Length: 149
Image (cartoon, rainbow, N blue to C red; front, side, top):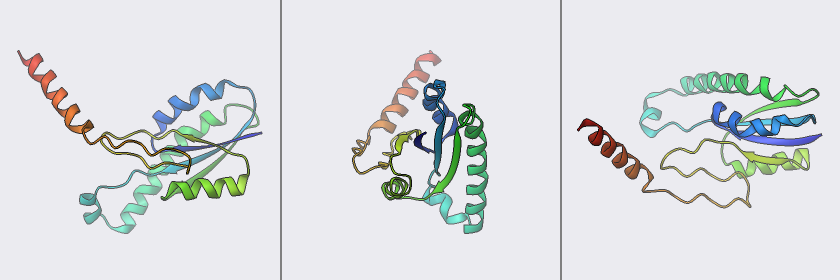
């Protein structure tokens, strides 16, 4: 049975990436590794620790609820759920030590203007797109001005 650890922060995006792998009829041991999005520093100031934990529980329950039925669609497949904190390189090293040969799949949605941390030591760090947000904003405003005429 093949073991695949899927690092996820958005269920719809992950399903889009995983869908071609579900077409095989071989049972798979799926490990859903949920990496919660980080709160901005402005929100973090005003939200209590208990409220953060409550939000994290709701978020992970919803994420696992969307992914698990699709992953169990192949007969004999197993699904394991994990909610982890960073650094992800250490998480993937612990998974490989515990499970042996495991495939790591990065199915996280990229956020505009923010480089995601790598999931393994061999994965190259994403290039920092410092200009991505200003370019997107300028392009959006240009399109709006064009349509206004």
